[in-house]
Image (cartoon, rainbow, N blue to C red; front, top):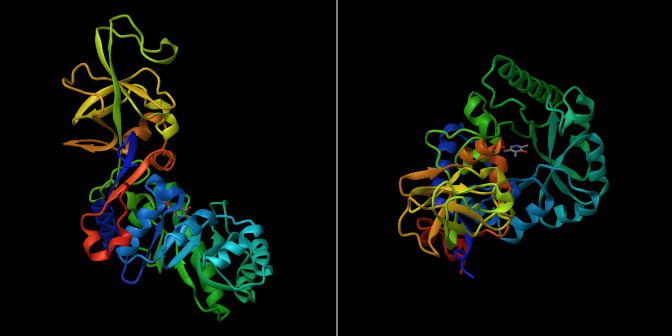
Length: 383
Ligand SMILES: *Cc1c(COP(=O)(O)O)cnc(C)c1O
């Protein structure tokens, strides 16, 4: 099957390369770009994205789950793969077998991981105020103790900022406090003669808003994919395009309704295109009333978004035929629909829109620049 059959994701790997270069330009010398490719690389496809990044010389990756780490290793991804989230003891074997690095979410968890008995690598997470994961920053005794667990090699230590994207005074002050707390821990450990592990704090927003930090690594996710959670950033380029096909065309008389629940009534005779993509593919139902691009022209979405289909008004776009391509997200000609546009309409952030894109959307990743140099194994093409 080729990836252009019904509905698909098309990766612009030149844009990914551009974003890597932008981020590298912002990070200090020697600071590793730890690419966050969790949730299937925010819906872009973890394997094609990680392969492209590996070819770009990136050898640090972050995932949320052990299964995501195993998927990358099985696809031949090299370098450090840090599992940011919780791994159940029944899956410690996978950490060991696939050489994954586990986050120590607190001191009790560290003891549990050590009790597994085989050598494992880990990064310590410090809770400096977000109160999600991490050992509390004031528990310096517990944090220091993690360095002497016999079966665990500590290769990094990190924290996560709750307000990295905040422009307000309170948010800025809170981020500053979290950073100070983290470095307070670092200094206590250094005072005890513990060799300093690799330190990392910033996610995408942190890289842009706290560029003063000089860490050993940074963990960008969204910025790699071309934006921040709900803002487009000058210089970054969106990587993803979601496209679908016109399945059928219908003439709808004025006064007739379109779709479920008689929710939309034609005010004039309409030419309606049924598109072969729906909410099961990750298109939010709130996109009702939005638009898609057909031949670089805006076609309003009318009626409710269905599970596998949605309808667009193409009355003002002459010549649309079954099989034509419609762009739901991304660019067509000089028009673009961003994940931020969709997120705003759906009342959420682009991260959620992207990471919820459905498995049914095949991934097509053309690598015009990378293929010749990097060898055929990095070329991911459907069909
Ligand atoms: C998801 C995640 C990131 C990446 O966040 P972005 O805002 O997408 O850059 C970084 N660090 C941790 C701990 C995360 O969970």
